[in-house]
Image 1 (cartoon, rainbow, N blue to C red):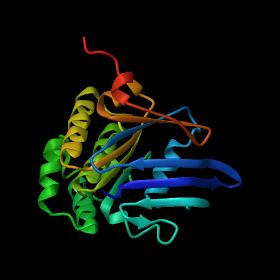
Image 2 (cartoon, one colour):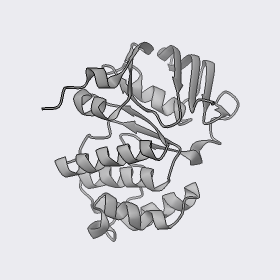
Image 3 (cartoon, helix red, strand yellow):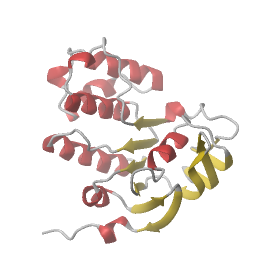
Image 4 (cartoon, rainbow, N blue to C red):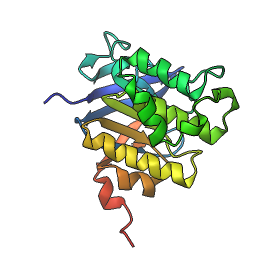
Length: 223
């Protein structure tokens, strides 16, 4: 079976600086992979490369069967990226932002009401994005990502800014995504929590994939 993500000697430059240097990576359908490493290790750049937001300088990159050296835009309807910015429109309500994202991705309209309930956003459905708190905006960004029903879900520090209840909801959503055969890559500094969700951990160091391990072997034992 063709991997969802396939990188070979992937190099990305930010200016003249190699943010990724000779990265090899394969991710299979349905995997949940944790990207770990310190600040500046290349985690965010790797996610943005997979989303087609940064250009591959050299090497090979295939995502969802698309060759990113030939076209880094055509696969975007089949993935969702949650980064540090929500990507939502301040003057649209929570519901309107979700409807816009769902239509753009070609997902069913029924996904809107479902995700509003699952992420506890139903009481805020008619509030504009500009009036939401930072944590509420983060929940909306996650709701948009899930409602698009992506084959590939890319998450950059997904637990940041969420309260305890929202974190539990997110963890359940990620478990459901994997059960549905969706593929998830998440970058996180909250390693204990993220390792409990992931099946595999890829450690990035100075733009290189420094090691691969079973994330569950590194997770703390249940008490």
